Length: 333
Image 1: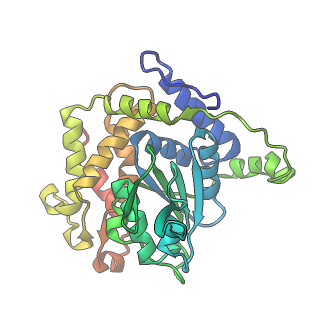
Image 2: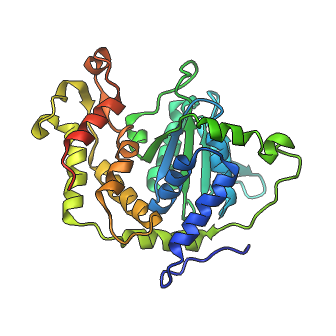
């Protein structure tokens, strides 16, 4: 086992270790600290992440850099229209000597899985991935294989390409803890990128110095245990539930949005919002959740779980506008 920073909950090393992780990521990913912080929050909360953005915003690179900082097995799968479920889960191999079949696991049997351009794969592949995300196992023939703990899926997709893509079904979208939208970096960050060693000397020139990982599997388990013990006041819990229920029954909260929403977020969204609020508090070095922890991540938890109607589209309202109205209207405790 390589040298890793162990998380001792009896000491106050958790937050410095998390800060060190984010700082290291930022040395290789310029101008995307918000994305990096949310990836770390999802890691602590124990939920899968869908990252959406136009090409060239370091979505895939961010996942790769994060995987190098974690002492965990990592696999990347490039999703394409001709991908088959067996390419993901594995297949059964016939053994002539014994006349039996043996299950050979595929690349999905890992701790960190990067599903690159996930919306390019057909429905059969999506269903295989859905089982892994929800049940923590894959089925090969009549054999079920339990996935490692932790098992973490980070998927990317491009929002501007529609030809040759397969929109993710609502059931699968609901299994993602967060959907993170990535925007362009500011001017100062873009200038700083031009001086990065990988730009000046090339990605494979050997100039990058390998650093030891920061967290291993037991450390991540300790982080998740610490996050689960973060205190959440009853008023914060009510705030979380009200935010989610307002997407389903906006009229009950004095919002004229019922005709604008075809599908509101389910109870899984309330659970997800509680988890990420606790993780955000831990990353921030607090032992209790504040309304800011909830509000700062509510859009990432809800944007893929709320389906705007045709009326909303005709009125020029997208899901972000709808969520902004809800967040501005529901009283903060």
